[in-house]
Each structure stands twice: as C-alpha cells, then as structure tokens.
Length: 430
Image (tube, one colour):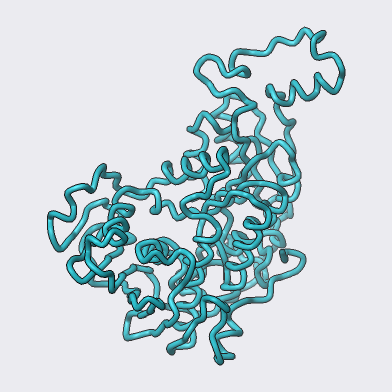
C-alpha cells in the first residue's frame, strides 16, 4: 500500500497558517494558480475527486473529469496494483506532479476530509455497496452502471442517499444526450399522441446462475487483493478470468455473479430511457412476462414495455422506440432518428453521435456545487434498476410475475420474492 502526501493547496495552506496563529507573519508566496488567476479555478473552489476501481470504463470517465478545470483528482483506490499504477501515471502526467495518492482499502480514501466526491467504476458486484459507504462518509458519488445487484439493494441505495443528502449520479449518460432527450420530449409532450408502447434493447434476455472456475495460485495481496475484489459477492477461488468484471455477463448472470447480466447491463440505459419517456421515474412496471424471444412488461397506466433484441432500425447501439396513437420515434447511439413523420424531427437540435459522458459528468459537477438533483439520481436509478431486476426474475423463472411498486413485493409469489435480495458477504453489508 502506498499513500502520497496530500498537496498543499490554498485551502489547506490557510487552514494550517491559521492553526499556527501566524497567518500574517508567514513569508509564504501563493502562486497565481492557487489564487485562481491565469484563467484557472482556485484550488479552494475546485471539486476534489477520488476514484475507486478505475479500469477501462473508469479511465474514460476519469479522462472527462480531468479535463474539467473545476476538478482536482487526488487519489485512486484499486485492489489491483497494475491499475493503481496506471491511474496514478495518468493523473500525475495530467497535472505535472507526483501527488496522486494510491490505496488498496477504499475506507482509507473515504476517510480523507479533503475529498468532496468519488468516481466509482468497480465491477458491478461493488457498485451499490461502495456508493453507500461513500455517502455515509460524506462524499458525493458518480457511479457506473449497473448500480445495484438486487431490488432490495436498489431501495437501500435510494434510502441512503436521501438520508445523507449526498449527490448521486448513475452513469446512464444517455440521459444527457440530445437525441435521446428529444425523443423523450416527443413522448412526454403528447406529440406522438397518447403513449401506448415503449421498446428497449437490453442486448440480453438470458439469465443463468454464476459459474465456478478452476482455482489458480493466489497472487500476492499487494498485487491483487482477492478478498476485497470479491467484496460483497459470494466467495469463490481465485481465477484470473474473474478479474474481468463482465465475465459472467456473457452467460447472462442472475444473482451471485460479478456482472449485471440479463436485462440489467444495457437495460440500465435503455429501460431507464423508457421509464423517463413514460414519466415513470418513481415507479416500475407491474407485470413482466417472457414471450418468445422478447419480454413484455406493463405499467399501471397501461403503457406496454417491450424488451427485444431484433427488429431495430440501423440507428446504432442502445436503441429505444416510443409509440403513441398518432406517431412514433426511434433513436440510438448514432444520434439519427426514425419517425412516423418528418415533421416530428423539425426541432431535434444538435447531433452528438456515440455515447460520450461529458455532458452527464458536467451535470454531476453542477449539482455537487448547487446541491440540486442530478438527471440520474439515486431515486431514478432505483426504479430503473428495479424494472430490470424484476424482468430478470421473470426470465429466470420462465414465467409471468406481478410486481407491486408500492410495497415492493411480488404479491403471493414466494418463489419470486426470494429473488428480491441476496446474501451479501460479511463485512461488506450496509
């Protein structure tokens, strides 16, 4: 384990000088950059950021944060030495110093009083638990998706962030992209007529229990802390393939694995957009039924949600389609549209293809400063994830299930109710 010294920025300089009772006498020279001159944001006004579990996707997110002058990244925690080293080099190169601290234990990073917020991009087995630990430590959180492992954890995540008053942003960045926002606006404004069907592309409609790979020699703890890597997930012997957080997603995944699997991995994006279009951010569908190679769900207001992997227009990955009584619209990651009438697309605005996170991260940073709700806060993420978890339960059981989004149970269905939660390994329970 290694920790670098916390840099002496303007805020810490003033604190130390005041404590020494010699603020006016000290001959310190504060550089222009520390005072916010030369076009830079003063350190005292920057959002001090730490990172937990920064792999491939996390490095992309971190790059977005590092290019924002209002952010100062100061520390990374990862159970893998190669990633701690890689992120430190990335950050130190950006700032031209050697100040980025490294940790194996996230509790040490979270204990730092100078850190305002954290980027969490671990494997999905850690997302919910790490987010709640961060909130309880007084940190705001930007967390990659899927954010939770079960219906019960989704509810707990929302409760913790409401109770602590911390800012949360799920990494469902398509909420901040113009083409998806425009399609949602068409659905919510009535320009498609009365909404009746939503279509989402989950990329997976298969659920299986997690596997068990042959045991391999355990590496030194400072190279890979296997116990911390597993975290809340059920114990299993070390196998290097399991260091790929998405290993089980290829097989579907249900409970006990490392990945979201089934509807959850991509559903946390596209089902989330359907929730938004249906003005259903505070609820979830009440019925879920596997039908052939699709899953059909229904909201209490009668709107139908169809999860399917084929039959889409060639508009890129993560497509959604919204249908009303007088029109329809479809869009995807290419930022192009299909629509029942060209007139519907007259005001679609700027085109941003791909699925960049810059706008979503900007929304998070603005909310850290203003304490406003983000576009994908813990309550919104809670219900979008519940919809995906419930769909996975229906797929796993191979039959229709009925869900009560007020009581958060499957009425009279003991088999489905047992799948609302899972045992989390001690001591990583929140």
